[in-house]
Length: 248
Ligand code: SAH
Image (cartoon, helix red, strand yellow):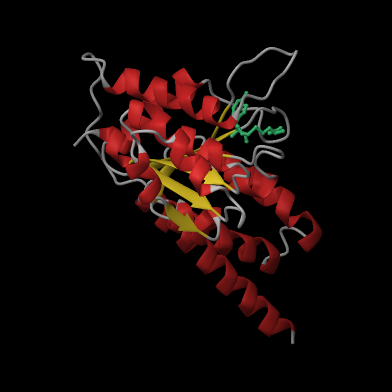
């Protein structure tokens, strides 16, 4: 299967329909056809989108809509978020060229997503947290942030180049990778474990979980890895509950 068919472009809360149309065209140019929107604004000018999606209107008609980013990437293994900013959990950023093999390797067997933020505010920290990787496109300090559709183009172009490189061979799959839904179940179980075992206070939980998400995203998290980590949380919560009972 062509790995480009397994790649989803996710736009979070886009404000300008013109950008959505331009992105349809960009995607079609680069052979990527799965476009999803997360809570798009209600007053988007779809006629404008159609104009800019010239000859790629088909993608516009097939857009999937989701309420939350978690839902949009629930079936995706690699979820690469893009940010014009670096620092605070965004500092392990990849170049589009560096992330291309990571995304394509995964897309050979699973769905993978590239996530783009709002034109005005980018992606919020809680959305960045859902991503397994962060991409930063180098740009001049005169003006760091690119137009949304241009950022999509640069990322899609790198994927297209690599997918069409005759020397690129996707890997055989060993153990299947965990998808977004499984990862979120794991993080929920670990949040509960950290509280119930007294590992951290509720005020520190969010910060701690961001760190944990980054640690667990550094390698490939397989379904088997996730099952072990889920089992650990389950047993620890059970032990914490037993201790509580004894105290009473
Ligand atoms: N002020 C916002 C800019 C948003 S630009 C911010 O600081 O994040 C809209 C979107 O385009 C971003 O959310 C990101 O998805 C993409 N984008 C723009 N410039 C980028 C860059 N240099 N690297 C990676 N993504 C970029």
